[in-house]
Length: 236
Ligand code: URA
Image (cartoon, rainbow, N blue to C red; front, side):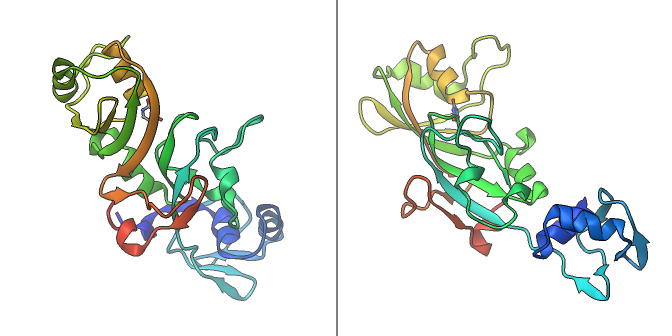
């Protein structure tokens, strides 16, 4: 399905595409100033296709273009849109209408590295849907060196505490005694930390390097982000 077949609320459609805030849009909708495919509407939550013909008074509202960013998440920031007490990934974004954005794959507060942020739900679904087995690579720093037997368990699959289904085979590239690059194709809760806990080890540092074929841009300092290029968007 293409992005243009996607459906969003009419108030979000207009506020994403114009300089009006959501509440200003809701007022103009209630005032009967909006037409969708030729029909006057008065319900702000009405779902509309992104390729619908939307008019505000006599001006056509061009469909909002989806936005895609990569962020180098710093340690200490929560992968959430809102948090009452801690800085969130979205707090780092200084862009208009940032409340329309969401995170395509979380990282723990004490993990760093590549986080993708978008307002295109179908695109993020392709990344996060378990059935798509999108590979994610992490630089992992461990408390204890791994044995060859433990590496082979990671490569074949192991049982996480409280679970009955083994993990899918992971790829392990040893970088030094305590550092390795791990690639997994699942996104279970705290998966990497739990994989090493299952081996009696402990993750001291976790940094995401890539998602699918998309590598974290090494020029981004922790906390910095940039829009994805069309080629990068097309990877998913
Ligand atoms: N696995 C974890 O345990 N933590 C993360 O942040 C990402 C993957």
